Amino acid sequence: MNTLRKRIVQKIPVYVLILPCLLLLLMMMVYPIYQTIRFSMSEVVLPSFDTRFAGIDNFTKILAKDEVPAVFKNTIIWVIGTIVLRFILGFWAALTFNVKLPGSIALRIVCMLPWTVPSIVSANLWRWILQSDTGLLNGFLRASGLPGWAHNWLGDSKTAEFAVLLAYSWAGFPFVMLMLLAGMQGISKELYEAGKIDGANTIQLFRYITVPGLKSIMLVILLLEVISGFNSFDMIMAMTGGGPGGATEILGLFIYRIGFTSFDFGGASAISFMLLLIVSVFFVFYGIVNTKAARKRGMAG
Image 1 (cartoon, helix red, strand yellow):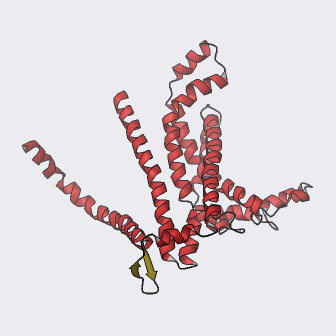
Image 2: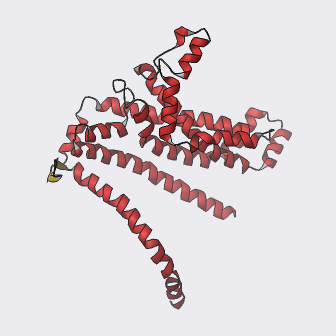
Image 3: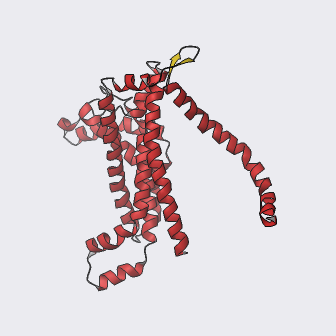
């Protein structure tokens, strides 16, 4: 008992130091969540922001909107698309840099640059590249004698979502690369040597040693990318604003439009609460996976 009391007394200065940050964090996270839940079940009167209890009316009204199925479809395509593209780019880069090559450190730094650039800057850069008249891509196609291939990439609903997906994946793949590379370098070289002795080729080494060794890291990346995908907003907003014709409008942009264009704060809060629940499920899974991985590392240590 005395030992426990001593420990508590010794930690009091630490608690005092972190208390202001903790209170600020709670204020910035808990209060907005509380207001979102309250508004989602209320009729919000503007401009006073007075509320009247509305039950589930906001949820039924917002889900009855004609564009909601398309928004959910766009969001699912967006999340799956970003995961696939970022994994492909990240895996390719990690496998490349896992081999000692001349200048590999410099190339790693170059590959990390997209991750360090602010998302708004990346969005404007890609918008300039993909512009129909003065864009770098169409200019290159015309100069190469392929004017028929020039296209309004961001103005056509058939190509806009893939164009934004490509830009978003380019901006985020270095994180996937870094995580996978760290995992690859943690796999024992003796396993690869034993596999080669047994006659395994490169594909078999990758399938039976690399992939199983990266399973836990890949699951963590998957969960983080799902959370990131559902929370996407800034790059799409800067590049297309959800257009053309709602082709790139996902949940984040739909919430913004309902709340700050239609000024339906009750409806926006209702869809925000639904998004919060979706993300929370994946966040809980991430916490469970991360805890299990930490325990395994502790047991291994």
